[in-house]
Length: 627
Image (cartoon, rainbow, N blue to C red):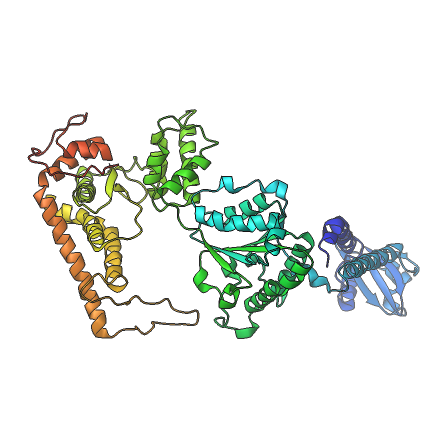
């Protein structure tokens, strides 16, 4: 059914239904409940009947009227009943009236006519919609594609608006060039990749890249999500796939972009319903359309490029990834420091930044963030600047926005005992001090004891973009993660519950070192457990023996214990720095990386009412990697 009829006729439909309901309530509403003849006779003998209207109704005589007190009644009797004749009722003091039988009421005729008219209008619209749908059933509207067609004038995105994924842009530039001048490739017998699968973490810019391809090529752009194909009705998904590709053929050359294709492209044979699963029927139709129309489209000069995005390429069906369907996978990974800087420059074009804002430094401090995270970071900074009634975004706004994004807003109203604040300060200083002293650890750029979210304090680091991490770097990371708990033991002589998250991160890292990276005495073995399948229930059997599991646990325990002892020894050796940094941190509440370096080198900071708890002594030679 063409869905447009509902938009054109909905007012008439609502009006007709309302009119029919009104007639049913007013004209055809039932009268008073009919009284049994014996009860009416008892009321008449007791002289409690005030009025009566007699009206012949077929083979019966209808009586209705009012009892004493104004209560209505209605009853029936035979016409020859001597106790209920006109004269007998008058003799008993009842005011009697006679109403001759009448034909059909005009109100009844009108209600029947309106009902028939409403039914006729519905039948006419149904018949018309079937004709417009070329004989398809009325439920054909479910089979219409939900793809939104974006005109090239409304795309408004080009490759100049995308940064941090230069290799992916180069791969897609070839597609743009083909859509602009396809004859150059056809003259050489070349075939452009029919489908391109954009693979990367959430927020890395896959959808933005697809829009940029449409904006550069100047062709229509069909955007749809994988979940839009699937419905509870059997066959609807396949019908929507057919309708989408039919629309694309009419608009070719064009681009079809399927976001989150893993919703419909998962491996077959893993569902509870086997081959009758609606998802599998939709996927089968998608496979046919992608490989079936290519020859026809090329013969007619119609060029359709299919782009799809997913962050789970491992769950896609193998038939979907073979050449002829998705010929090429384009990796859109998290950007490096240079890429993050370019992304920040793009998102800051519409934001007034203070001259003191260093985007390169921000890029180094946001390792692991993708384009969406960086855009949100600058937006939070703009909100903070507006809240402070400033007309420019300061570097402090961006630093505060980063802390808010990572940990939540400050909780300065939270009342914390001084003993708890000191333990928190020792804990965070332990992390930061170990990071500054170890050669392969990421250096701290901020230290704070201001509560944020669920954290009572934090030590933030400036990670380096590394492609490979050595065993020494992994051991230093373990040592830094355990240094907070070790600092409590060394400085206070007692440990608290504040290291729970540190233990989780350290244990996960140590287990990966043993089971994935071969960085233990267990050996270079792949011992990580594979994820369970869709139909797997309960615990799955391990791929190694119980003795190997014991060896893994022992190796993980040895790694954690040895690095904990290393952290404790390191902090014991520099106990004077631990006390000094803790006192300064408690007085100032927050320390930057530069301030941390000044205190460690024996310098003083303008802190109110504080002094070093211990003499600085001989300081170690530190690497100048503090920013």
